[in-house]
Image (cartoon, rainbow, N blue to C red):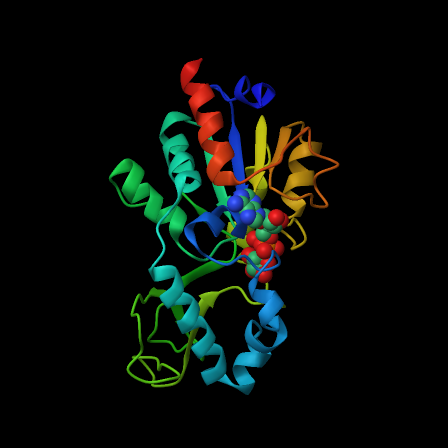
Amino acid sequence: MQALVSRLTPSARITVLTGAGVSAASGVPTFRGAGGLWKNFRPETLATAEAFGRDPRLVWEWYAWRRSLIAACEPNEAHLVLAGWSRRFPHFTLITQNVDGLHESAFAKALSRPAGPTDVIRLHGSIWEVRCWQDCDASPKWWRDERATFPEMPPRCPHCGDLIRPGVVWFGESLDPDVVSQAAAATECDVFITVGTSAVVYPAAGFIEQARRNGAFTVEINPEATPATRSVDLALQGGAETILPQVDKLIMAV
Ligand code: APR
C-alpha cells in the first residue's frame, strides 16, 4: 500500500476508474458479483434498446425498482474519500461506470457543494436522467427526473407524449464520444486506480491497459481477482470502503 501512498502527491496526475463494487457497501447490488443483478435478471431482456422497444413497461418497472433501491442508499466511505481527493489533488480525475449517482452525492456530503459537470466522468449515464424515446425536437438531450414513482407506467415525454427512456447506456449502444475522449485523456496520468470493477466491459476495461501503456503506476482495489489483476503494478485485495480510507489515512500521515 505504501507503493501507492508514496505516489499520491499534490503534483501527481491521479485517475480513478470505479465500477459497481464501489457502491456495494452502500447496498447497491453489483452486476456480476454474488447476488448481482445479472444473476437474477437477463440483461438482454432489460438493458437493451430492443428490449425496451419490445416491452417498455417491463424495462421501466425494473429501472423504477432500481431507482427506489438506490434512492434509499447513501454514499459510503469509498465515495467520500474520492470526493475528498478531488479537492486534495489538483490533477485528479474520477471516471465511473456507475449510474447510481452516489459519487455525485458524496461531493455534496464531503465538500458541501454539488458535483460539477467535470467532477465525475460518467461513462454509462445516470439512472436519474431520462430522454425522449423519439428524441423529439422540443425535448433536451437528457433531463433529470428523480421521481420515486411515475404517474403512469411506462412514463411519457412531457414534450411529445411518446415514451421516455432511462438515461443509461444500454448494451449494444455507443457511449458519448466526448465522454470517452475525456476518459481516454485521463489515462495520461502518473497513477491509475481501478476500484470495484470486474474489468470485463469495454471501453471502460480498456482504460486500465491504456494507462499502463502510458506509463502510469496502475493499481486495482477489489476483493476478487479480475482480468486486470495480473497486469496492474499493485493489486490491493479487499473492499473499497475499507482500503480507500486506509490509503487516505496514510496520505494524511505523510
Ligand atoms: N469493494 C470493491 N470491489 C468490490 C466490492 C467492494 N466492496 N464488492 C464487490 N466488488 C467487486 C467484485 O469483485 C466485482 O469484480 O466489484 C466488481 C463488480 O463487477 P460488476 O458487477 O461486473 O460491475 P462493473 O464492473 O461495474 O460492470 C461494468 O457492466 O452491467 C454493465 O453497465 C453495467 O456499468 C456496468 C458494467
